[in-house]
Image 1: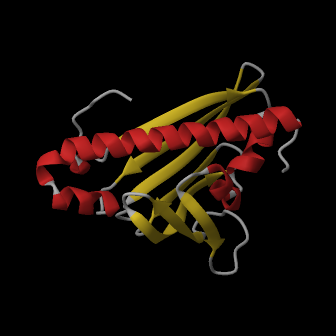
Image 2: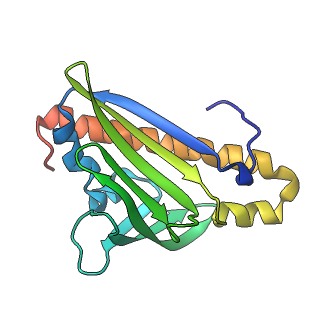
Length: 174
């Protein structure tokens, strides 16, 4: 990730992508299994569906519990805001109309396999990152840059794990 000088109000984003030697439908099985994500993340600790749900659907909600060495532990409620199997899954964190973040996975066929993208946008609503900025407003751009680089690294690791699971097993099961 290159320095952008972004501020929180700019709603900074980061996107990572990888090509996977499998059809999008096969990759979708892992991408849409949100309960699997904590096994592939150093920050997300657990996920629990709400309202009797057991998987994603437009409007479905889930609780995510996260942990970060510098930020502590926190819990958020996310809302599925886009759900188009086997192409797109997105959720807004906290308020879907004014989220603290939006996470999105997209899949498209490419060269006999699938191009998988993960994209994350911070804001516009305040989050743990904005609390850090409030404590050190003169360092806002650096705080945003460092956190976005962390997200980029974590997201790249998640996509590589999905790729490895799909390509080495030949199927999308654990």
